[in-house]
Image (tube, rainbow, N blue to C red; front, side, top):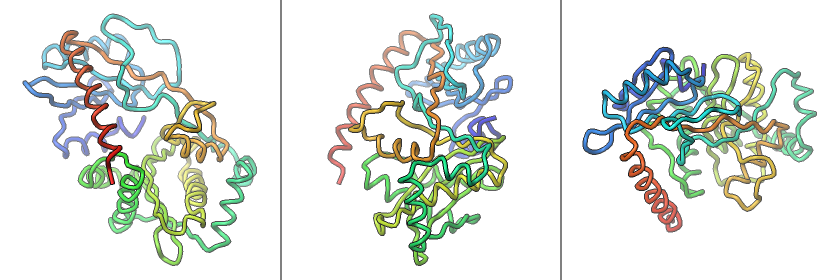
Amino acid sequence: MHPLQSEGWANARKQMGIETVWMDEYLMTIHKLPFNYKIGYLPRSKMPPKKTLDKLYDYGKKNNLIFIKIEPYVENIKLTQTPSLQTSPHPLFPAWTQILDLNKTEDELLKSFYPKTRYNIRLATKKGVVVKEEFDDNGFDKFIKLYFETTKRQKYFGHDYNYHRTVWNNLKDKTAHILIAYFNNIPLAAYELWYQDGIIYYVYGGTSDKHRNLMASNLLMWEAIKLGKKLGAKKFDMWGSLSPNYDLTDPWSGFTRFKEGYSTKFTEFIGSYDLIINKELYHLYNLIHTMREQYLKLRSLFLL
């Protein structure tokens, strides 16, 4: 089971004021729109069978849902589309990720990394960078400070503090882990990682603009991999990537190349699908959504 299909995630969303519905074994969140219309979202589940899709459709009809977005945690397969189930024009998750097989020894993993990645790990260690797992709210506060520094520096929109704190509060005891890389007790980089059912996920990260020559992030990722093995993970999901043969000018190319340095496997998922319930309003929603995305891109250009 993916963490986004867990009771912890359901509790976090309810505390944010978002309605949750369990349909068979699938968790769906309900998101309000003006005029009492709503959207359903089924994140990172298995692909629902037809009987569950029929139940979801019936629920949507009775509860004023325009559509239900379904983004299964399923590797790429051919899926039969119907008039009601169509490829989404506005996916929330990227179609690709990178996955590292952890069924190797630490020595075997380290030897498989790209030479530059191994060099940077050794450099960070030699220069005195140390990585610690933080279990308390003080660790979370250090992580979130670096996270927001990064969103500001790289000019992208992340969730706000209350969102992240609510998620941490609900997942920290069973699922969420925070690792922080320090130099002379100064936090340089931090990750929030989730572990569940044999898979560790790199979900959020943040870095400082100080001491960037110390390559703290490379050592931090190596320690995250070792933490995954310690927890019993068989896979490390890097939580999003460009596809192979990516464009080096793409804004995502930097972190795609960074993850690739750990000898990961590019993995394509089945994609994002919309279960359309109100066809007319669905087309209107997509038009408005496209206009909003264009506005946010323009706005990001003028962020200081």
